[in-house]
Length: 360
Ligand SMILES: C[S@@+](CC[C@H](N)C(=O)[O-])C[C@H]1O[C@@H](n2cnc3c(N)ncnc32)[C@H](O)[C@@H]1O
Image (cartoon, rainbow, N blue to C red; front, side, top):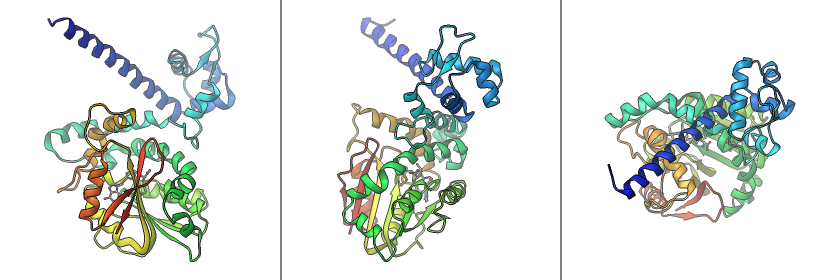
């Protein structure tokens, strides 16, 4: 039995945990709607009854009704007064968040991300005891696809314009003859490489990633986007000391903090760059020092760190074990150890990422 202050703290935390549980379960229902095409059917053919949704998507009618009613209670779908027999609708604003994969508001993959982390939890629990890592592949297609789909809208909408025009001389070089050469390090499923090729029709891009499944997907994505002639992909460790080249741009989007040996990867990026080339790193926008008073963005990053980014960054010892919350001073120290003279924080606005130009 505690005092009043303890009781208040107990009740506040208990309430918060229950709310968090409801939020997590909401996201897993979003995962169901996303994966089974339920939102898409509602967006294109709705409003629908449970039997209408079942008929159009091939799901069982009883499950369809349960899901629809949960979604109405969660405030994601609208419903007629008669929720048993009624028709459920997806408001246009919600459809953009749940169905429009090109929109900067697209967040349906969040549920998929949770499912990916859940899949690897037995390995994560073992890793907490042993100190070892958990392979990226252990998080399965769910996590791989989550990252690809959640980052893609930023690449589609912002990379070639807003972002690259904030990097001195970059847009001019990528648009000029002779054709610029770009190396996209830790490219995942290839959406940044594809966005560069689309934004700059002369540029030739090579994407490298350690994960075989990501590279296979990247190759398919580039072919479907019609840029496969100018974009190629290779399964390769970014820390491979044999990497060298003459690239006009060497870039790494949200990947340095995931690498076991970020200094070796940055050293390779330096060796890949031409004498006039740009080295660009985008990684999580977090505070410069540890504080408990973080904004929502940093709290989001903390949420993934111990469960995914840190374990994947501990797979080949000795590993830096950076974690998602890679701060600017940490990157600066990695860059200096890799031979760069300095790191410039670029004035590019973005809620999630900070952009760095590595100099010297
Ligand atoms: C968070 S994902 C980002 C993927 C992509 N850049 C994007 O923004 O969507 C991190 C990627 O880093 C890759 N990665 C981690 N360590 C690597 C290494 N040593 N060499 C190459 N890729 C690596 C992972 O396989 C994964 O695809």
